[in-house]
Length: 640
Image (cartoon, rainbow, N blue to C red; front, side):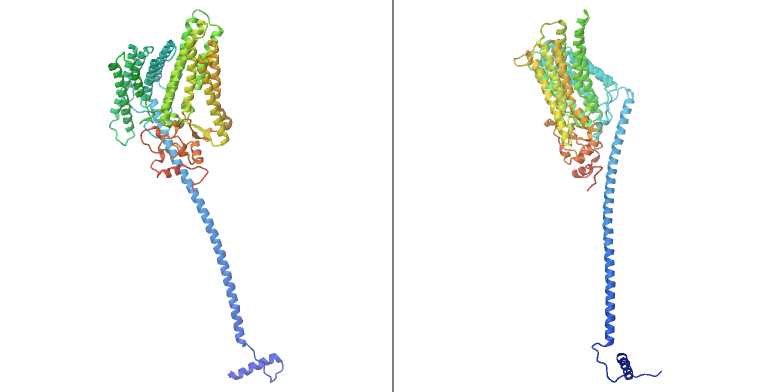
């Protein structure tokens, strides 16, 4: 191959270029170009490459943005899923905590019920006929549920003792009947007999009384009360009054040694044990019974029979006989309620029996007429209405709302109301005896004593029942309209109670301006009292009627959750519980969800014991705020 020089190559290129532009070959040269041909081609290639790279980079950036957006969406969805998963796990954990608490409570309840069952099935001589004092099942548990400790009924020994006590009440009623009114000695005698019953009930609702030693102690107390009741008609400066003081001294010393035995049995328990409260309780009772015994000894030996200060001895001794409710050692709440109910029913039964005994001599010589049968039926109807007005608080009132479990002030006034109820019932019984005797004897005019005793006693009975009911905590619903209905029902009950009381008091007063000047026969007076008691009974069911109308067959405790009380003594004490001890009920869970301030409005259950107690299942869980947070939840919400 021949090599070509650069010059010839240039000529050839120009020639070929000229041939391309002009056609035939000429000698004229082509006009000069502003850009060399090679540089133009290179620039065009560079621009194309740059444009391509820009497009590729733009596509890459768009893809990266799209990928980043997808990652952000995925991350956002992951956060939402993580939050939902966290909430589900929190709710699951909350449910597990709740389930664990319920299982723990259920286990404790099963153990308590098993202990009760074993105690009921145990023969009285098991463990020895003469054995040491034993606590009733469930008493030693501070945080035991009250609803799991219900006793079916009082024992036969307790029933026999109640009969003896009611016999003493009847003797006081006969003294009131003979005197035509309630005198100071009879009032003190009645208080002595009632406090003797209170000592026995206080011991039997805490300790086992089926052994032989407890039976002997109950028998000795029955002897003492029976002998002391024979002097119920006497005055202070009499030998019979000294007999009553000796009876009170004997029972006080008997309980002193009884609790000394309890102290000796539990004196070596460790300070950290729950049984230390048993030792403290026995010391507390021994101090009071010892001071009471010294008071009676001073009244009997030092002052003498002719002293004018014997009433002061009775007053001091009676004050020392009172016990602060649930001090140191709680009792069997439902057993105590049953004992109070049985004592009141027996009192009504003895009143009815005394009326029949008064009427029996008249019917031995003549056949009763229809009117006389009707007359005897009226006291029975009146007493039955009073029985319906008296509420069995062991079932109608929730234990945590009961006056005895609210605080000690409410419990003290509750006991005062019980004393007033039994005393006024006894006064009413004495008046009914006089009224029956006057009617069957055909007296022309109604004696003022019988009229004042019957009307005054009936007024005191219904006021005492109303006072006892007012000591309990009431609950109203969250709905404002429903709340107004319940307030209207309670207000109506109070107004009707006061109106009926004023009417009967006015009937008992023979002064000018009172209804006592209206001439009424015995049967007319009983008809008026029966109608008033029936009207009061219907009005007393007004709140139940409102509840039934609003909620029907539903559980009303789910809606009636907010507590309120009529007396300042019902104000919760310190320390306040986080919500309530038992949060297993539907009402408590609903209230903890509805009312964040429930810790300041709920009744304090812990103020009823002088021993320091924890918060049940929440004891040892963080601080106060954490305890409150842990129990404040609902199944429908989530923890924030």
